[in-house]
Image 1 (cartoon, one colour):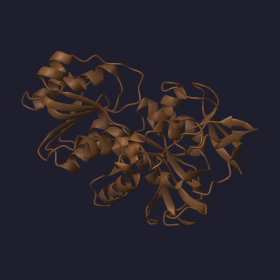
Image 2 (cartoon, rainbow, N blue to C red):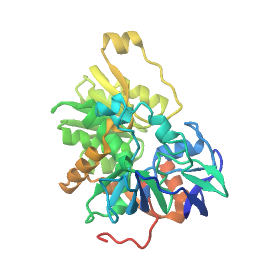
Image 3 (spheres, rainbow, N blue to C red):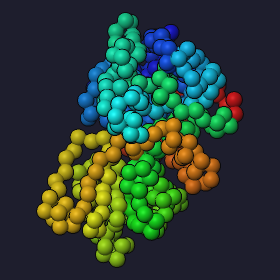
Image 4 (cartoon, rainbow, N blue to C red):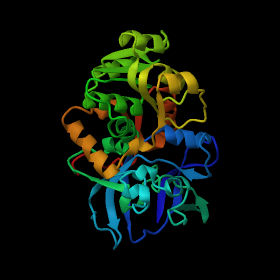
Length: 373
């Protein structure tokens, strides 16, 4: 089947929209999905630039939403016409999946970051040549196929154009707080970087009952939005020292928990310095940068913990519906971070994401879609 897709031809290359991409035939346990929209994530940019290592040419995108057009004979949970959000793939059979932590699937990298389908076959080709996929999904396309475990069914009365980023950015930030850090009611949280992932973490801190939720950024408009959707305090680290400001806000103690979404060396270091004794920092950005930690003072004497979290330790089929319920209750207004762009303006949308002009760009791939269809 020939489809239209945004292809990155080489490391650092611009997206090129092509209409001659061949989509592989659907497997028995797959769905064929007509993609309605897709968020652009900083992970897409990291792969495009080559920060994370990748093979090209490639079709990126992993925050897709769409409508099921076909189902394989082994598919049991979906039918034609279902509305879905797409996320990562896990096999469901390894020891970590069976423990309920699919983000730690023993073959996670093979399934999601190898550029092929889980069985090693091509997902996409151009003129007979391999084109790498992402997350066994690649949502910068008009159509794709995904395994049943990639997809999460959502209500048809919801606007599909809004929902794609729940599959990565929003579930990563919120899951890092709700699933991994699990802050106690009354505890304190600082979030460094108020992009989509950071704001999701911040809103999750409010939901969890943190009495101080501190947003740190260098963009005043983002801090204004953070304040609007739940931050108790904001720190513009362009104008003041973030660690000093956080210590002042917490009466000299430092915070119980911190999340860094920037991947910037100095900011990651600050997220550790801002912790109080016994505090925990989660570093969740895709970044090539390194940090130095004092094993004596930070980790031993102060009993601080520094952890990494993949995809918010989420189970998409559990966490995405939970976020939608919070959204309907007005407790997780993720739509306030989004801005729509036509598919053809993907390079502009990506640039606006990188510059910080737009928190969460969403590409509208099917212009004919109307909410409620």
